[in-house]
Image (cartoon, each protein chain N blue to C red):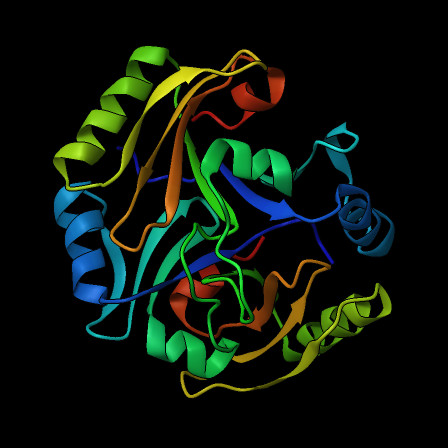
Length: 138
Length: 138
């Protein structure tokens, strides 16, 4: 199995709410949109970010674990400077992200904070001074 | 906010079990490994796949939703042919993936199946004849 990820798919409760957040709020450009079903957006040269209406996700993948708490994953968006981290978190807040956790110094040297999308899916906005952090920057 | 994802981080119950599955089983090459804490692997030119020991994930991100069911996301690994889909699913099964759901024809024309990693995180192995599916291939 080659070492690559092609799509990241998230289940969402209401696709139009997600579309409003990512497209109208954050300014992302849709690549493919089937209203009420699926929204796909480029997230890298060979990477697609896909939002899938929850009922359809569950019909194919299985029932989603319920209950309070976060999902066991985060997506990170890395930027070059701490000021950019703060700016993106402010942009997400303006787009309606809730909660938004202000960035803080991490013990490994980074400066990172989190926001939740309309389904509570967590995005980490980060600057990472290490080699692996530098390698993901555009 | 630029339209890109830099890291995908999954919480895992036992990092060494995850390392054995991805590195020994699937043959992925670690980029960074802090035993008992975090394992990072390249998953694209500017994309890192990160596995984070669950207790540390929860300390930073929050308590994870418990209960039966799958997490509300999947990662997809796209290949060029249906034979490759079947071959990667067989490779995952040999590496200990459980369950493995055999590929089937999807209504949009693809041929896809799923496997679960040691934490039940779902990978979709797919061939997608549409333009968006072709664009993610190496």
